[in-house]
Length: 284
Image (cartoon, rainbow, N blue to C red; front, side, top):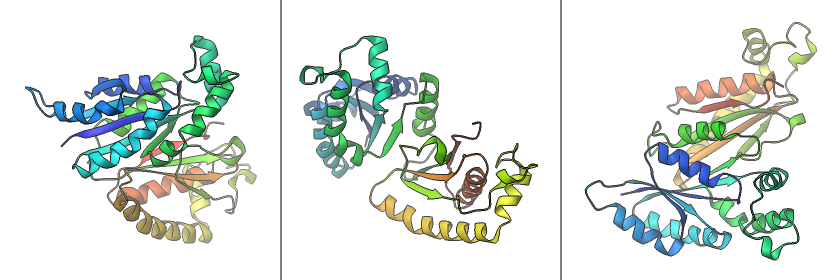
């Protein structure tokens, strides 16, 4: 049976770049894939002298992408492993990219401006994004950073039946992460920022980690968080979800959220998962 990845998302958000990265990883890639041909391509991939069991199919227009959701259910019923990767980006960044490349937006014929076209496409793709197994927001990513994420998620390091979990620490004053599933606010914990000796350090430093984790309320929070994830992760897996991103936020994203995220990853490792850890705002 094939391992099939449908690459969907907003125009200009990086679908073609993601396809190139997957091709570098050995996936068989078809760009601008018509939905009507997906079943035939999957069938043909299983025959011939070199069987292709990893297929990455870049889906084209918004209408085609919406049709893809039905196709996913059919392929899964046939026994294939099928995932949807959705590439997203902020409207402001997409406008900038189109301005830099001077390309025409696919929906510009029905819109007054590029921003209007992006808004229309975003609305049409809302259902597809909701059905996606993994959403990657490329707003702040360059091509190398996007490739790193693609390699980490699809490079073959994780077993096919294991949910891939990402943990992200962030600071609320820098904005909520867009591509996360669960968000936990740890601003209720005592703040190391007010200790002049701890302020220059981060949650990765032992002194800050000891301060944060040494609070009784921190330990109670972590125990309850572990229990919640013990319940939720198997439930998500039973619903076919392949990826889960957990975000831990504090005010600046440098002390409390980092320490808690580090501890959460240690627990996930001890339970058999291989989490991916990102400290989004630790250097700000």
